[in-house]
Image (cartoon, rainbow over all chains, first blue to last red; front, side, top):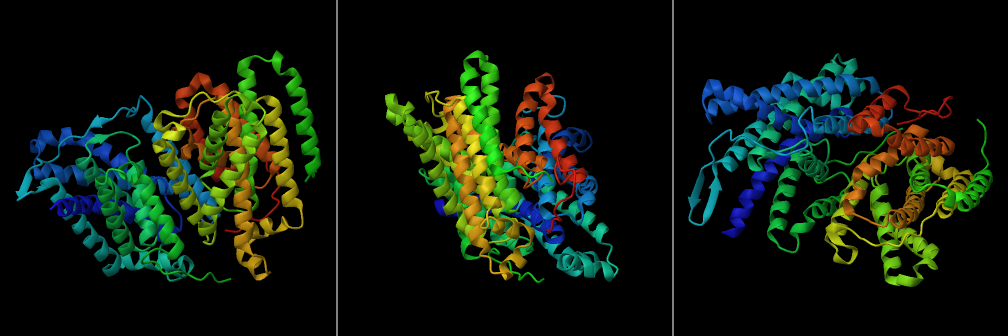
Length: 302
Length: 305
C-alpha cells in the first residue's frame, strides 16, 4: 500500500517534470541548445496565475473549474508571448553563431529574469502562498489517499501529451517542426518558414512550462522567483535521460526522475541526497547510453 | 598580436608577489582582502580558460572543484592545528590534487561525449558537491566549516597566480599543447589527424580542476569560513563570464577580465540592488555584440561550432 501511495505521488510529480522536459526537448530539437531560461518561464507562469486568479475569481466565483481553466489558459498565453519575445530579442540575433555563445546567452537571460523578479519592486524574494485554484478533496481507497489535485495533474498532463503528440505528428505545423529539427537548411529550401516555426516552438514550450508551473504550485503552494530552478533542473535531467530532442523520451525521463525522487525521499538516509541522486543517475546513463534512453546516437559528418 | 612570453608573466607575478609581501602591512585590511580576491579570481579564470577557451569544452562546474580543493585543504589545516602554517603549501597542493582526482572521475565519462553534455554533467557535479558538503558532518555540514587559520596573504596568492599563468601558458604554447587548440578549432579534423581528442580534453579538464582546487584552498584560508552555498553554480557562471569577457583563449584578456569583474562589485556597491540585473544584461549584450570578448580587437581565429 505504502508502495502504491508513493507510486502515485511519484507519477504525478513525474508528469509535471515531463511537461517541463517537453519544453527543453522541443527547443533543443529545433535549435540544438539548452534553453536555461525555460525554468524561469515556469516561475513566470505560476506568478501570472497568482495575479490572475483574484481577477478571474470576481467573474467566476472562488475555486470554480471554469475559472481555473481560464487562469491556466491566460497564464499559458502570457508565457507563450514572453517565450517568443525572449527568442526574438535574445536568441534570434545569434542564429548561426557557435552553440556556446547561445548557451551562455541563455544563462544570461535566465539570470536576468531571476534577478529582475527578485527585486523588491517586481515580485520580491519572499515566498508567497499560491491561491487554491480548485478545492482539493482526498479520495480514500482503504489506506490509499489520493488528492483530487494529483488526479487533475495526471489528467491534464496526459491530455497535453496527447495534444502535443497530435500536434507534432499529425498537423502541418508539426511536420514543419520535425523538418526543421531534422535539417534546418533543407527545411528552409523546401519552403518551411524556419523562423516562424522556431517562434512557434518557443510559444508551445513556454505555454507548457506555464501550465507545468501552475500544476507544480498546486502541489507545492509557495511561489518565489527561484521556484523554477529545482524543478527546471530535474526536468532538464529528465530530458537528457530520455534522450534530448526526443519527445517520448522527455515523458519517460520525467516519469523516471519523478518516481525516483519520490521513492528516494521515502528512505530516511537518502532523502538529503535527492538532488545528488538525480544527477548521479544522469551521469550513469550518459556513461552507458550517451544519447539517452530513447535517443539515437548521431554520427557527425564532415 | 603582441606575444606575451609565458616567462614574462611568471617574473611579473613573482615580482608583484614579493613587492606585495613587503608592502602588505601598510595596506588597510579592506584593500588587502580585495587584492587577494583578485588574485584568486585570476587563478580561477586562467585555469577555466584552459578548459573553456583553449580546449573549447564548456564547463559549468568550476566552483565545484574550487569547493573540493578548498574543503580538503581547510580540513587538513584544521587537523594539523598548530603546524598548519608550516604545511600550508602542502595542504594547498593536496587540495589541488584532490580536486584533480575528482576532475578525472567527472571528466572521463563526460568528455567522451561531444557538445553540451560536459556543461550538463559539470552543472550536475557542482550540485552533487554542494549536496555532499551540506550533509557531511566532518566538514561542518550545512552550517559550514569555521575557524580555518588565516594563512593566505598577497604573496602566496600572486605567487601562485603567476605560477598558474606560467604553467598554463607554457602548456598551451608547447608542442603538446597545440593539441588543445586543435580540439578547440575542429574536433573532427583533430581526430582525423590522429589526435586523441578525449585524452586532450581530460588533460585540460584535470589541469584546470587542479588549479581551481588550489584557488579553493587559498580562498578557504582567506575567508576563514566555508559554506556549501558559496559554491553554487552562480559562482561557476561568474568564472565563465570572466573567461568570455576576456575573450576565450586570450590569457591577457582573461586576467584583465578577472581583475575587472572582481573590482566591479566593489564600485557598484551604490547600486547593489541592481548589480546582478546589470550583470545578467552584460552577459546577454556581450554575447550578442562582442562574442569574441571585450578585449579582442582583432578577429584572430575563426570560430567553428
